[in-house]
Structures are given as structure tokens and as C-alpha cells.
Amino acid sequence: MKKYNLKLRLPAVILGFLYLMGCSSDSVVDVVTNDILVESISIYGGFITDGGSSQLTVGVIPNNATNKMVTWTVSNTEIAIVSDSGLLTAVQNGIVMVKATAKDASNVFAEKEVTISGVQAPPVLVESISVLGNDITDGNPQQLMAEVLPENADNKVVTWTVSDESIANISSDGILTPKINGTVTVTAAATDGSSIAAQISISISGIYPRNATADNMLLWQRSNGGWPKEPYNDFSGYYREQTEAEKNLALSTKNNTDTNIDNNHTVGELRYLLSAYKSTNNPEYLAGAMRAIDYLFLAQYDNGGWPQYYPDTSGYRHQITFNDNAMVNVMNLMWDITKGINNTDSINLSYKEKAMIAFNKGIEVILQTQNTVNGKKTAWCAQHDEITLLAATARSYELPSNSGSESVGIVRTLMLVEQPSAQIIQAVIDAVAWFEEVKILDIATQNTGSDVIVVPSPGNIIWARFYDLDTNLPFFCGRDGIKKNTLAEIELERRTGYSWYGNWPKNLIGSEFNNWKTKNGI
Image 1: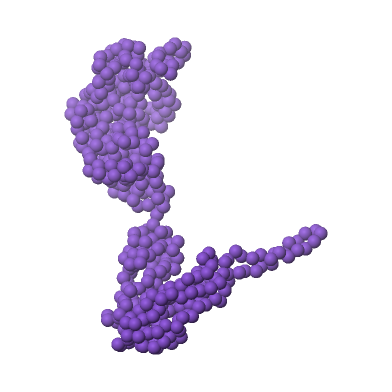
Image 2: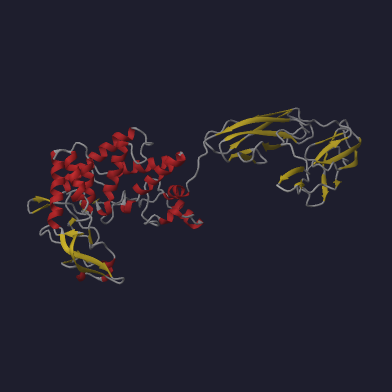
């Protein structure tokens, strides 16, 4: 039976001559392959008494022969025919000689006389095969079909093979599974000994490289497009293989509504997906990022603010949240989309206008939430009430205040505006003036290993995390919710578990502010 796309095999033993040239002598070395040749073949099975078929098999010696495949033939095809796999099919009663010949270079063969009886009528053999399939453009498996004629053929089973298994493989029932982009020839061959076969060329595309971290992020992405804060608050869990338990948990919680922008979540994941798309062109990563952007559009309040969580409004999660740069991260993303920078150039162009609208609304609510202290515009609280826009309490130790930390990111966001209005310009100037006013001189913090303490540091400039909205003085707060004047007054757990001092505004009020003024002719 004719087989399509069989690769030619090299002789089992290859003799080569390697000429080694030297100054003093010449030598010739015989190079011999390590192929182990077939020494003998035994044929098993064969006698047919019901006029049907019999599967022949062979035993090959030695057991470790390199190539143990054989070619099947019969002495008289008017009595029986044999397939490539050794299926002997009766044609009429009689005696036929079956031969199995080794496919290696040994030329070893075996023969067996087989008696055929019980034939009432000649078998109905396959006359034609048509393979039905299409080019694969999405990288997904495809079920190929073989139409075998005539309809009343006794054996309509076909064997499936592909020309290159590095590109795709095919199952016994004709499911073609791509591995890489390319083209393969698929062969469907009759197994009844008729030697009928058909081929189809399948072009495969749509297979893209994978990024394991991006795949993990897609796994944990909620159905609404956002991401939860847990279990990977610090993102580290994305960077390793997920356990079966983790995979099951991620899939079973797909519809949870614990999605948020806290600790850079949702923005951080979607930015990673955009980067992964840039390096792989895998459309799954872009699609995941787009779902996340849609989530952020949906989460924005009409007044321009973003809550820490959406749609969960429990506790303080509904407040407009600047804490840990949550809203600023979203604003910066929206700005990038409007400019097509930082891997956002792959995003649908229609999103540029949406992002600009969202960004401008965010700027408006930033201007409206700038705190006034003693009649002067100052800075911002880490969170503001979404209705009144006033500074609000979040966790028990996060009281209404001016933030020496979060306000820095807010000012930088205002500075992004290319043609700032008079109101934006004044907001930036007022905030920088406030940073200058509340800076603290000649102290620093020291981590002793078991505590965080304030120590003298001549010439050092530092800012507090929280400033009182009435006095502009720094304050500190433990889990009891009571303001304290010094860091030492709050409990150890809060002293060591929160950033109470920092130099966050240092660059902002220096070179960044000067460059911004120059750029805008101020």
C-alpha cells in the first residue's frame, strides 16, 4: 500500500573516510554508525477461515534493532491483499505467500504461507478518499473528516498521518492539533489493503508565544475585567507556576466582585499584559488588557474619581482613593493611552478619546478635592468622600489629613497637562508652596531592627505622611484612631508597619517644578 510523505531512510551502516592531515603522517579512520541491523523476522497470525481479515504481526531479532519496521507484500493480490500495517484481507479462497521485509539496510525478510477460506464474495474495497478540512488561522485544533467511497466498503477505517510532527500532530480520529505556525500535509490512508490514500495541505497560523506570567494574570482576572488584591498582593505569586489548587481557586472565583486598584492592582496587571503582547503578539494578552481598561472606565465616578474597589462599596472602599497612588496610577495609564506610549499603542484608537475624557474628569475632581487650610489651598488627603469630596477616614489610623506622600503623585499628574489652565497652574503652585512650608528639618528615621525611631540628622529634610487639616502639623495615629504628636506615642506594630516619614516631595519641588515652570512660561 502506498504511503504518502514517508521520509527516505539512510542506510543503516554508513562508511566514511576522514582524512587527518598532519606534519609527520597521514592516516585514514573508518567511521561507522551505531545502527543495529535486523537479523531475523518471524510472522505471526494470518490464517483466514471466514473470508474476512487477519492482522499480521512480526517479531524482530534482535530486540534492540534500530529500525524494526517492515514492508508487507503478498504473492497474489487476486487471493488476498495486505495493508502497510499488516492487515491481510481475503479476496478469494486459495493460498497466498505473505512476505515481511525489513526496512533497514539488512535486506532480511520472512515469508509465510497463508490459506484463505470462507470467502463468499469478493470484499468491497475502498475506491476513493476525500479529506475535508480548512487552514487553521486561530491556532486551535481542527477535526478533519475523511469521506470514504463506496458507501458499502467493508472497511472504511483510515489511518491519519502528518508530514511534520514538529508543526502539528493528528489523533487516530483525525483531530489536527497545531504546535507552531507552518504548513503540513495530512494523509488519510485506507486500512483495507486497497492502497487508497488522500492528502490535504493545511496552513497553520495564529499560534503565538506564551508568557507564563501573563497567562497567570489572565487566569486570575475576574469576569468584570479587574483583578483582586489577594492572593497576590505583592504580585510575586504571578511569577511562578500555579498549583492545581490555585488554578481551581482562580477559576471558581472568576465572578467575584473583589476587583480594585489598590496597591497597583488592575493597572499593574494590564500594563504587564500590554508588555507581553508587545513581545509576543499574542492577542489573548491584548484582549485581557482591553477588558481591564473597560473595567476602569466603568469604575470611574461621574465626578471623575476612582474608588479603591469596584463594584464593592463596603467600608471605605467606595471613597475616591489617592492612597498608595491608586487613582494616580489609573490617571497615568489614561494619559499614556491618549499618547499611545508605554506599550499602549496597540490599544484600539477609539479608546484614545475615552481615555482623554476620563483623564480630564480626573483632573477636575483633583482640583475640587485640594484641601484648604486657613484659607489657603494646600494638598490632598489619601482618600476623599465621593459625594462631598471632603477628606475622609479610611483605616482607623488613616484620618482626614493632608498627605505628604500621596499628594506628590497628584501634583505630578497635574503637571502632565500640556496646556494647563490657570486653575491647574495655581493648584500646582499652591501644593509646592505647601510642601515647602511643612518640610521638617534636621531629623531622620532609623530602623533598629526591632523598632523605628526618630533621630537627629543635621541638614536632613523630611516630610510626614499625615498633616493636621487645622494646624498643618504632623500627626501619627495607631489602631486606636487617636492622633498623637510623635511617632514614639503609637504602638510598635504601627510604628514599624507603616511609612510615617519620607522624602517623597524632594525631586518634585526642586528640578521637576522648575522644569514645569520653564515649559509653561511661568
